[in-house]
Image 1 (cartoon, helix red, strand yellow):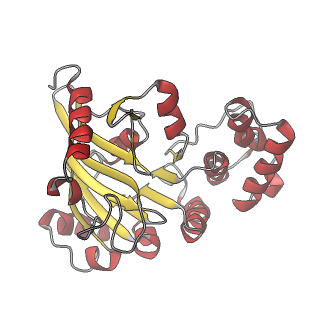
Image 2 (cartoon, helix red, strand yellow; image 1 turned 90 degrees about the vertical axis):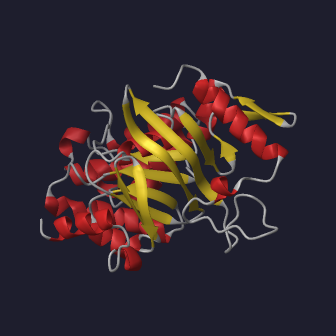
Length: 302
């Protein structure tokens, strides 16, 4: 197991080392990254910046190595779907990106800023919790379970963070909340409590709540897995609308139809590693890795 404090030392060394010399090829070869000679780090060949960039990420739970040297990037406006068997590390990876879990080594960049670090002169040093939380506020996350406040209405669930965290005037927050609930098709449920809503409706409220903070990135952790099959479509429709609006999205899901239709790229993860990363038409039709082929065959026959 990695000694205490090594994560911080490795992050500072990796980031400050990158400032002192050209980025090493291993730091640029994350799937989806296609920097050309002369480009600034973080830009891909189509000119869109990386909104998420993960470099050499590792995470342990005791002796269990759940994330194994993972590197990848997600460009601005890109929809990347992460698939794989249960227990492969997908949800843990998302939780590390949102810092609900702290990685043991590696660096996570959010819109070019290393999570957990701040610039001091020409060096990167550990950031304060306030600075970390500010950066995290740019990342919206929707979970398997809806996590709504049971004593608040749908509208109050959406506006609560705007009023208490962003110190927004209640009238302004209410206007935003009404607009977002309309966007997810719940204009007629603003005064309803979670116990009065179906699972699909509750999940749509959770999406509206995440959008209220105006995130640059949306993370979805199996948002339909707790829903009855007949309610899945209404949540996926909202997610598809978000994708079409240009939202940067990283989605963990078992909904292969959604991945085929909406994703720009699909990544297959197993045993803590990303084994394959390709456009959906390539990954689903002609996967290169034997483990990907095996997984997709089992899904097709389930």
